[in-house]
Length: 280
Image (cartoon, rainbow, N blue to C red):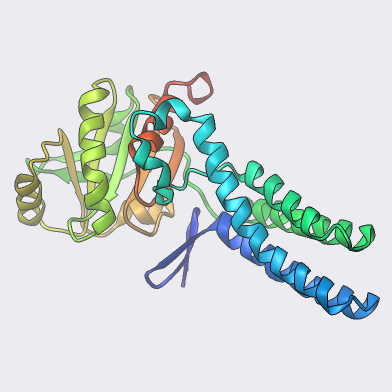
């Protein structure tokens, strides 16, 4: 098991921290509900409604979080509507989903006494806030270019500080990685659509011949291809998992990090933030 800034890794399974927080909260609220059931002698129908609604609230919240996010970025998703169902881009509005899930839970359990419901909701929200604060505080996060340099296709060493002066997108990838391959056309097109942004394809652990054969076979002509044979970038940025994408502004400050497959709308959303006043 490995812990990164964005997810909990258990072998091939990668759970984003927000998902871990939600599941932890649901399990603890379920346990607290069992306590109230015995303490207040809930009838069996009330307990069944409670336990069922707890898990359906998760799905209601998940769907609502996706819908709110898509509606907030409708201009990005209208061009590629099929990307709406590609939830692997992790485009969710956390608080929108939280409100919808809690609302569903309260409505389904409207026959229960108000005090236990208030305690359970408070417990769930407190878990989300406290654990999220703990993760952000304890886990190390690099917020600017690390002091690293990598070899390019011309066998020249290129320091990461070379990219300071323009917004830069650094993608950690490998040819054997299916989601890396699926997002390649999105990144390749973005390189043409955004000439004022550097797109750096930082290969993880493969040889020059392997990478060149892959790019040639699929017709990808990236301007900046670098090699990270030891995975130093992933270690420095605490990003264990492929694909991973890092978004730096022109000053070399990290604006966003994304672990997992990118869709075109999600990539455009991140790129828009690179030139926003808050990223300067």
